[in-house]
Length: 129
Image (tube, rainbow, N blue to C red; front, side):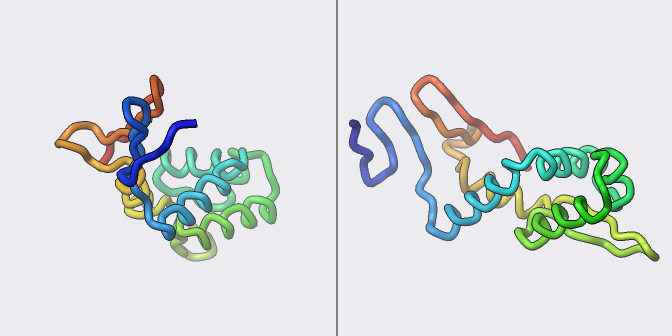
């Protein structure tokens, strides 16, 4: 087993950013929520369309309104999406600023290049605003 230095780097193999306890909890919550296929699909649809109401999401997901509303409530409480009321419809959109903050913490910008985390031969990178 390799030792990780105080900088979070295993010499020659892994480059992992330092994360606060709060950031680790936030990332775990996001990954747990998005491990559900329906919630991941909701996020994809909202990212593509920018904003959808519950009825439109129900149609795309082929699920009932109570089921979709339950998923939306979990995502809203976690801060992933935000609602906007217009008449009798609730429209939902992704909280882009929240995602950007998570990605910037997980993938810190190093030396002006593309932010990335390297695990031996596997590299995760983030190209975003």
